Length: 330
Image 1 (cartoon, one colour):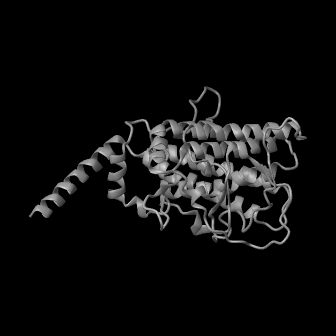
Image 2 (tube, one colour):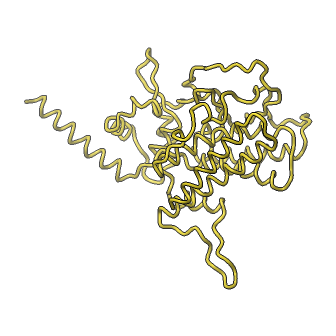
Image 3 (cartoon, helix red, strand yellow):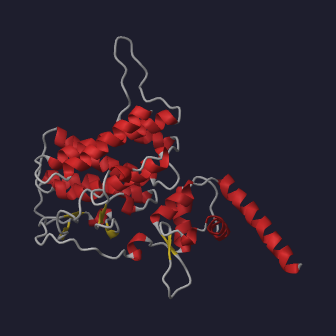
């Protein structure tokens, strides 16, 4: 397992190094191949850590065959091996989008613009990978690179100037349109599962703060590069990063979790126990209002907890309330 983890980290670091070389042909293709390989190794390490097989049953006269990346994704999801707080369906959609691009590159297909289309998926993938490896193996990718390189570059490679929507008058090459439709289907599947689409494809600034959350209807392609080369640091827009009210949060969580529906009481209890409202990853509150709004990461985290965990928190909260009431009466 350790070798799989080490090789996975080596692959992702090689991908970032290749992408950030000042002069590099075949940049997107090589980078995506390495990133996809890094995920396959990391997922196999996850299965091994969970005591699961990573080889298909051996056939007589044939060598052992390790499972494919698609099977890795399916088995990690099916066996609930995604760490708490990791949005499994969103990660699956993101990795499959890159796999689609890799497969086209391997089969010698190339079309102008596909690199720009895949960039938001690739950039988000590195951040997803960092979170996954830290949660699963206690390995922080940021320890091995400077923060400027973590999002694959200090600035986005081009301005977003056009939305690629379904348009009968669009003059797009059929293969490019097919590629776009495939990416949209992955995003639609993630959205249907209640995932945070910011975990599938997002453009980040140099501070790794979300500046544009994409949806499958708003899949963008950048067609003109920036000219000034200046780095502009923008403030995070909580409307993008923390879009859910408490009711919307519970609705999203209940749609994703297999257990009983959570109530506002469960919400109150876990906020008390884990101080979630003061965790910027999950919650945000404007200084002029009393209520908090919640992020997609909060959805993933709350959905990952079991009914037994919530029941235990309820019992603790009830004991806490009784003790507080007794102290007040005394």
